Amino acid sequence: MKRRANEAGLTLIEILLALGIMGTVLVLITSWQTSTLNLTTRANATGRGLSELNDLTGYLGDRVRGALRVRVATGGLTVNGSSGNSCSAEQPCLAAVLPDANTAGTVTRYVLFVYRLEPRSKVTLDKATDAWAEEHVQVLREYRSGDSATSPVNCVPAAGETFETASGPGCAALRDLAGLGAVRGFQPFLVSDDLTPSDQLPGGEAPFSWNAATRSVTLRVQFRQQAGGRVTTLPLTQAYALNVRARNVP
Image (tube, rainbow, N blue to C red; front, side, top):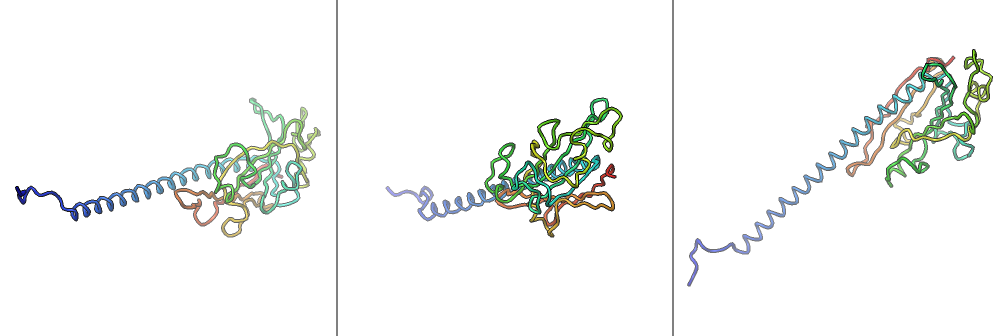
């Protein structure tokens, strides 16, 4: 018995057409999901970069404002005694001497902080695994003097002494920060990750610069990340610049 016309099933051509349409729809959905995921990843990276930028410039800005001595070094200063750790154009340093007070607000010592931009590969702790970043970004590390086992040590003033008159160990070296040739035994701390290398900043600008006439430091940084299949920078085309006056530097 023959089937009626309205009971006939789908033909092979109709099935193939339906499969083709479904395949196209699935490709479009997958492409849209991938694009959305990449956009979300880049948006999250931008948000993280803005937060890091705010934290970094605020932190360093506060250090410079309160410093009693400031030095920008692209040579002539070695950190922790190795020639490979010398401050240079590729690994510039910002050094600052700061007072440290107790809970009563009395200054008990003066501490030397050295900030240096370094290859990310030098850091073994406190960083996320990222093979791309190892080759394309720098980190900013902070080195601090201690009460002992460092050279120089913290300057501890006696009763009635100020930073300018303190005679304790380390005090003369911290006062003559411009003439200090090396620091040793300083403990490193990671301050910021994912920074555009100092010799690759837009316009060839330096990350740290000192203006003796105005007693001010200009900080220039740019974040660089690989996110959502694309390398992004923040700001996009130039470094973020912050000018800070060292109020207590004579």
